[in-house]
Length: 325
Ligand code: AHN
Ligand code: ZN
Image (cartoon, rainbow, N blue to C red; front, top):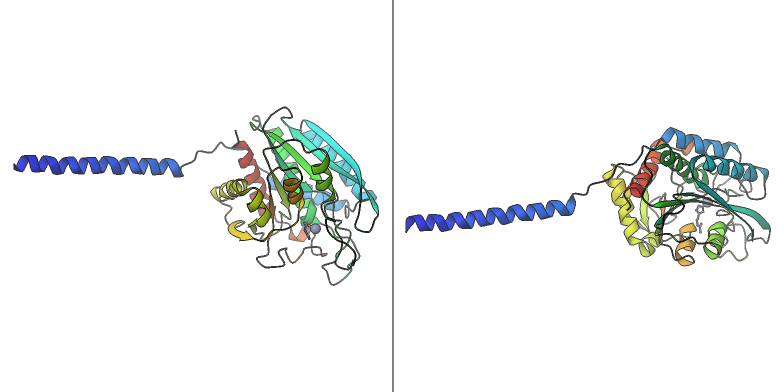
């Protein structure tokens, strides 16, 4: 009797132990992900690329600075990627002025079926309408424009310098004419006056892509990237995937798991017109005004650019794309 009770108790304990063990193992499987390592991102080089663009002066459409910076970006991307396509077009600004614009597209693995878009805008705003001084003068756009482009140039360089390409195809798209939107002192119609390059691209040549990631104001000191409304609505899985990767890499200080309002940016047109899910990694000030204190002011210069922020974003992008199959 005593022995059989002991045996029964022993069996129960053993079964419990086994089932607990299994549960733990299943649990472990659910939380443990293995990541493919990505090539290193050099934040000094990214910073150099931001500085280099700013040194051309404001990159306002229909100015020599804009032309020269565009030529420079094309040359740099030709060095670092396999195929560069220029989409040249004219678009009417809010005031009716015709702007000569170029979207610059660099493709890595151009034949790969599954593609991911990495985008930023390379033009800068013709006015400082959020500033209290010199409102009609153009801004440097170190963060609003140059930062995203600088990160993407270094991403392209890091990929081509590595002996291993990502499995997916990458299309780096530098949109033009993003920041020529109607200023606060303009009284006419202002709808759809921002994002002229992405609107043109989405209407005319949307190469197929699995998803896209837009960078906008992605390089300032103490940046906070919240999960923006249109990103969450149109591309919830991509939003989670990118934030999870950033947090896994230790960038929780920048990529915060809080939800921010929807904004109009290049990703909106890519989502709505080209039907490609695209998120926006954009600095959020935590309040209703959304954008940072420097936004559309003369404070948006090299002084606010941070190498650590550039690194957080660039390293996250590289790890996201190297972990796509
Ligand atoms: C609006 O101001 C409506 N959208 C902001 C898009 C933008 C401008 N991003 C950078 N500059
Ligand atoms: Zn802007």
